[in-house]
Length: 254
Image 1 (cartoon, rainbow, N blue to C red):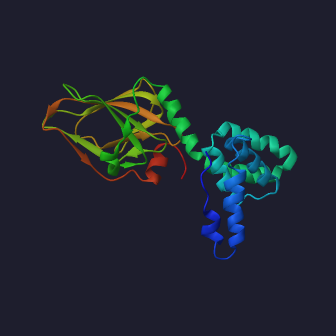
Image 2: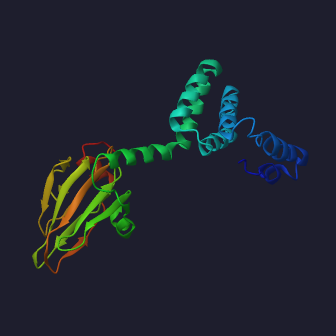
Image 3: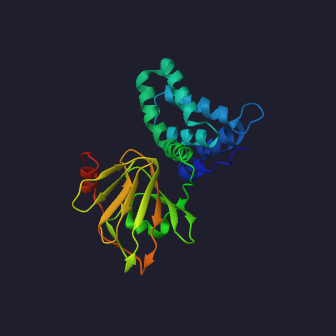
């Protein structure tokens, strides 16, 4: 169902009231509303192609790309639409259109990557790890798997996400075990090279060892964090792993 438009009156009501009326009441109020003749999705496709053909890749083009997405046009479909139109409208115009379309459908790219990562492992990604967000750079997620006897949590990192340097403490026992279950990541102890982690790898972290772990710059990463039972256990959170240290550890240049 078409949404009643007021943008014309809001932007030009005082300066050009007739134009604003035609924009809101005729173009959007009458033409776009004839969904029994042509669906909103198809009208969006026609509009996007018409604007691209004129080279009008401005804010109005971005608006209609967003409208097309909201009307059900997928990332795959818009890529095919613009590719097809490029042969008729011109290659440079397509390049300009693609740059804006990538921005509009960027969230879909992230969602697709997250869904793909979830499909690679048996454990849930969980909810955003908001309670510990101040100890991370980037977005992490936490899924509690066991909170009795032995604490087991699935921790997921978006690409480039890592936790701060930290130390596990305990009077007796304690520490942590990491079991990598999906993606690619890194673990590093203070004063030592970073260790690349892939599914099936395991890391035993004793108490008193300063370390960090997280995703590779270009990959999602998940590991199970197993809490080793102990007396008077605690975590000491320290400084963040800044970009210089992180990219050096992961063999990437800043």
